[in-house]
Image: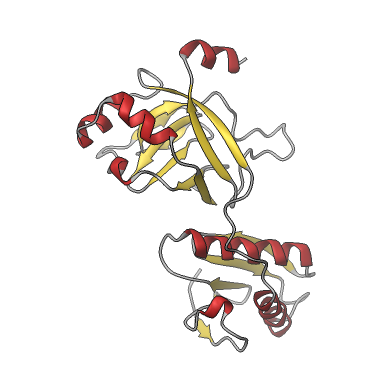
Length: 243
């Protein structure tokens, strides 16, 4: 969708940021509200605060709300909601955002069996950084990760908070098939493949949890704004939890 126009914001700068928000008109039926730049947990929390506020408001004519790292993308029906009405509601929401200085939402503990066939790239990641495989596991399980956004495949969480000692480039040649539940690293992020799919992340382990299940309500185990903590389990535990 082609970006067309940037329009000014008439309200007070949220949290003292004079340069944001920025509004971008995307065609006749969409608006992007930018709240910052880069991968920043504070910016992302503001995005999700705006998302929650507008979701609660349930304005007729808004078709979808899609939070990203630093912006909220809104699709709307101009026959049910005028652009002027949409802007008024968004600006009101921005002026009354809940406190976004708090941490992430609920924490999901994710069991992971690291290495061997579950994590075929663990040894490569360890060698790349001059660490032992156990040190990689310890560093990977230490943080509480923030779910910045869901994308790529249904339910795929992009997780921020990775130890900088584990920043690792993607595979030079992506795999044509990555098993569901695979836990990987790509640059500054870690993530979990919810379904079998192609992928180029460095695979260091696998979780028996189902992140995406069409027969579950809701089908996604994680949503943007939540938090994740990994813990290592044995192969026996993995097999037990898989059933």
